[in-house]
Image (cartoon, rainbow, N blue to C red; front, side, top):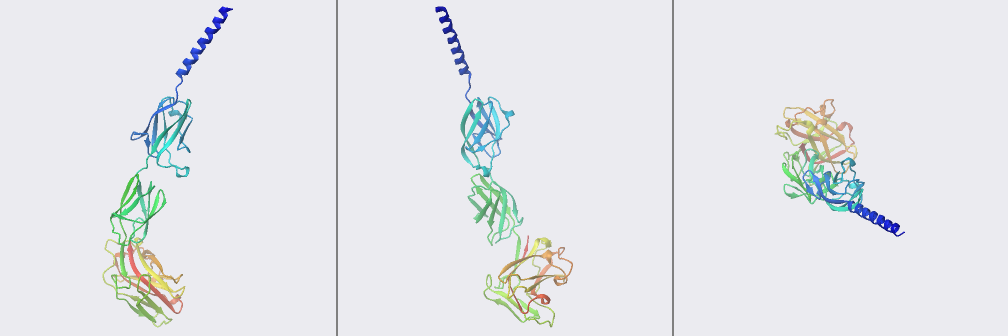
Length: 367
């Protein structure tokens, strides 16, 4: 009996010792380092970086959670007891953010949480809309990583801006902006830079004494003409009244010809525009704008007023037509560097009687 008791105690001792050895062999999951590739950042990474996790007890990886809310996918084929690889995601909709944040790994031997810092990438500028900017007009900038913008400058001067998204921002260009100035968008990740070229803008007349044509006169079947009417959108403006007379069959106003408005390098009609502030006494008043060239060619464009309040009308020169705007041939092939005169009047055949058209700030713009 005593021998049986001794034998039982011996077996229990052996089993206890064996179990203790098993417990000693169990490896608790541990992460020694998280290394971002490329660049070998330690415990830091940029979005979309691959991260190599090194440690022990990492086999049987089950789950990776970033910032306690974002589950990260991974390839289990790249998982061993000592390492695994995953890619840093970045999704605003899921709440991704920059800065230090917890990351939790659940492996076959346990769960552990470490701290990783998600770095903000340097922003980039991919394009502007329109491709050629115009001073005094908004400009949309498209790019990447437009987060936490601290400033946007042009030629070193701060600009107003509105962030549409992380890939788009709209800036307000000052009227005196200089072509060739450097645009800089600054974020905590760095700065994106691009040279901004502006459209060529020629002020024909603002009827306040400024522009390349300042002395306006009228002709044809007009009732009255005043090139210094007070109270316009930016000062004086011109009023031309047609009262129904058809003695001549036409009317208009002009400041004459002279040198061409644009340089000889500005030839493409699809890149050229007329900007003019317009108003009238009545909806339906029919504007007639005519362009003359240095070699005697003319094209016209007619449009009706739909709102008697002041508005800026922009007309592509390629949309002008021959035969005073009533022909079938457009000015798309016109060499716009030859334009040297602009005439403004009423298209008498289809305009209310009387029609008092008002216009101001005539410009030619090439972009």
